[in-house]
Each structure stands twice: as structure tokens, then as C-alpha cells.
Image 1: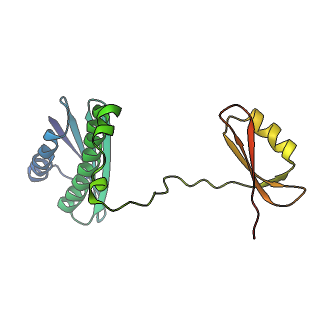
Image 2 (image 1 turned 180 degrees about the vertical axis):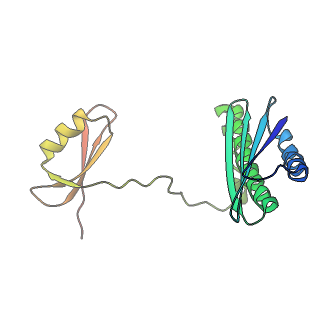
Image 3 (image 1 turned 120 degrees about the vertical axis):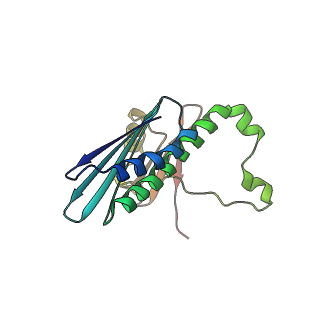
Length: 177
């Protein structure tokens, strides 16, 4: 692994250079060779900035930290880098399992015996536009989406128009009791 250290707006010290190089060696176990780590260490008034870039096969990771001491800035940047490198390593490891092996080995929380509630992965805000059912059908027909939420202009109720598997449309008319 190749480690380079560049100093900006400060004197180059062997102690800082060796500290950054020594601490960077912990990434050797996570990265596929050839890997390069480039450090940019700079000082602006009392702000000590440590910026690191890791370039390895199929990955480029950056981290930047500011502190009042250069050693602590390097340490904080190393923590950020390590978190990102571990995440990348886990992603590569899970990708190599493939779909067949992933279904053979269920997640660890299944073995606890406690059913886990479903998680909300993505939230999408939609503007509910007033229109007729025919107008909504035409709009969903030309769009690539699978559903359309709209306010029925005749009844002022919120409706959901969705595309069914057979190519037809289904309509959900929401009513409040």
C-alpha cells in the first residue's frame, strides 16, 4: 500500500508524516492491492485540517476532518475512513454471496424468535392534484409509474389509481368513517 502525505500552509514534519503513514497501515487488511492513500494536511489560523483519499480497485473513499490539533484531526479522519472502508468491504462480501446463498442464510434477527416490525426504507412526498378518474387514467397510462394518488374532483376524496399485473387499472377510493 502506498501512502503519500502532502502539507499545505505548514512546515513538513517527519513526526506527522510517519504518524499518518503508520495509522494508514490498518487499511491493508480491508483493501485489494494496489491501494493508495493520499493525505492532505493543512493549517489555516487555528484550524488544522486532515483530508484523506483512498484509491483502490473499484473504490474511492474520502474523509475530511477539522480540529484544533493535527493529530486529533488525523485520528477523526481515520475513524471516518475506517467506517466507510468496512461498509464497502461488507457490501462486496454480501454481493459475492449471491441471491441463492442469501436466501439459504436468513438474517441474524430471524433467529432471535422476535418478529421484527417492517421498516420504512423510503419516504416520498406527493402533491395530490384534483382531477377526474378519466383524467387520472390517461395520466397513469402515459407515465411509467405503477400508481397515481389524486383527489377526485367530483367527490373531493383521495383516490389511488394503480396498474394491475394484467395491464388494466385498479382504483382505491379512500373514505373516512
